Image (tube, rainbow, N blue to C red; front, side, top):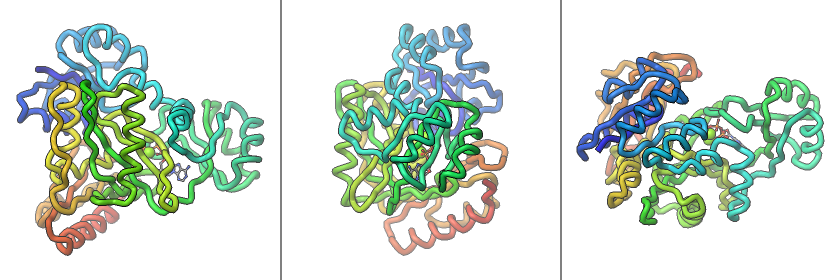
Length: 364
Ligand code: ATP
Ligand code: MG
Ligand code: MG
């Protein structure tokens, strides 16, 4: 079987690495000749909406998936008319637009921050009368790692904040006073079977994920699973999904979902019986899903903008290094390390060391 992947970055790379033991082959479509997964896979180089390349991809791949959610909707639809495409195009369409996404959460009974659609300065001034400060203005489309977002602290900032959006359709949302951020990763196969990973507790700074940690036996697990199940079933979803949540005094509010494997689940490579990448493949190929049981304590640290001496990282017991084959650039995720151990003390020590190393090279 050959799996096609739109996008050839680190997520595609980790999907491919999970698929080789299952005898799978891969073909990626990516505009960058140096894409990290390209060295591991057959590579079609060019734009995501190039009709010739899409026809070749559809011809060569038994099933097509993607590693990022901003594939034009017509591309997913074109591919779906020629081969199997998972997750489904409707899930992409909702996840691509923060307004549709927030509306959808509310329709299926999942709470969010208060929000309003913003198309001009008047809309923003009007909405802020009810939403209140602080708040966040976000472009509806194309944002990631906190890009295209401005925090609003007072009325005096509205005009410049709106100008910085350069006219892009946006939403404004109330700033959630959360105690912690968590995400739940789940996988669903066409038969309807679902598996859930333990919650991941996620630390962000500057809008970018820094550290993610598996929380087995968490008090909010059941609520998060209920929300993820609603999403999966309502979207008739196939593949791995990640739902980002704010925990406010034991109540979970949805932030966004990603229709793909997710950075907050990278600890599952060494930290789970079956990684999110393998379960994504199993789901889209309609194979039995694997156990999501954790293997001891597990967490992940991102390296952003720079990388410590790899020898220093490889010297750390309980740490597992994943390089993305990307040249360091400000704010760019270039690698992560998982820490996994049965021993809580050893786990915490390595996690602290890794976090300190990541902070030292951080350039974001
Ligand atoms: P990514 O897709 O990389 O997770 P993104 O650009 O889509 O990021 P969000 O997830 O919306 O951005 O926001 C990034 C981070 O900013 C959140 O994880 C959270 O830390 C903070 N944040 C976003 N919205 C809110 C909010 N309404 N209240 C409080 N904090 C928020
Ligand atoms: Mg996002
Ligand atoms: Mg997010």
